[in-house]
Image (cartoon, one colour):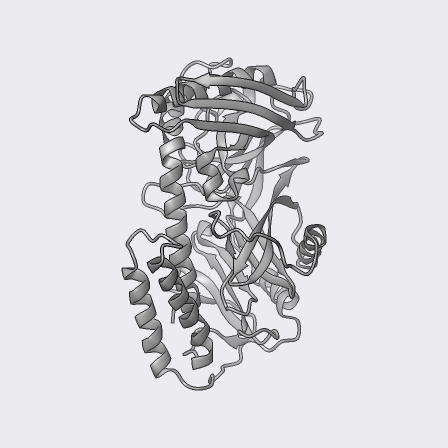
Length: 457
């Protein structure tokens, strides 16, 4: 049986993501199409798209760290008659003396690693196969949540792209499963050994155990024939599904009722990664997760190379022409009153080559001009639309970091390149929540080309 515990959460989560993408498209999609054209124009190094021209890495030599002349940037720019661009931003860059360009490939998980992860997350708890028929108790919490989400949708508290039809169908399936489910589980004990699954085309472990909460804790680990399909998701919540990030204002809690501080939660998350022997990742984002009246810190980690961290951003990157979305390498640890409430890892990557040990970077003054030019062109187009709203676009954080981009002729390998990301908010982004992690524009720090995070180049 497929992971039915995740279907409801994934369905609602996807609807919210669809809403987010559609709204962002109104404001930001034009910047993608406009900037792709701009990125193919002549830049200071005559190499318009790093990652599509291998020589660009090899011919750019030796900067001394990240070239910035100031730690902040303040400027107001009027774009047409509908956009006010307000820049009052801190410029954040690492104290790195060298900036290498690297090649990585995506990887899965070994059996030895899986054994250690299970030992850390489950301790002495007895593992059971999670693929068997669930009991009425297992299903009951999902039915309660589905009914609540259905009522919220009917009352206008959440918006579903296809109305309530899909949710009603899912609720009906849950109720049918509940009617035929046994009162108690006929548990099958297992160990942490992954077994090959033809459907997933991956080595697969889906296990559960009693960890002391209302619903049994579970873990889903897949190490795929295609490493890009590999993932880990550990869930240890009363509801039996992960905490949902507060994407919208209506979801955001007015005040926190978590029994530990954010700093303490971060320390607990770091300790967890250390015990799991996961190295080279640093905290890149902290969000709030909610399930009913319960809350958690959702702490994201991204990879660090040569003292430079990969920048966390909400969006995922598209794969090949017919492939599913590929995630950037990130780890999420959920911490609530019970401490470890969730762990997930996707997009895992490994360095396999160094193309340039210390690449030459553009001066930040050049990056500023490229940013202003692209934003002006983008929102000049927006200003010509029939939308009558006046938008304040605020840039409050400018971050130097790494980004994984596609190689032109090899979908199994990627380049890690330095970029500048411009973060901020607008009336629209504020409505989405977590706007701090939506980059307004991503600029290649080597040649000034604009990188489309949705496409991965």
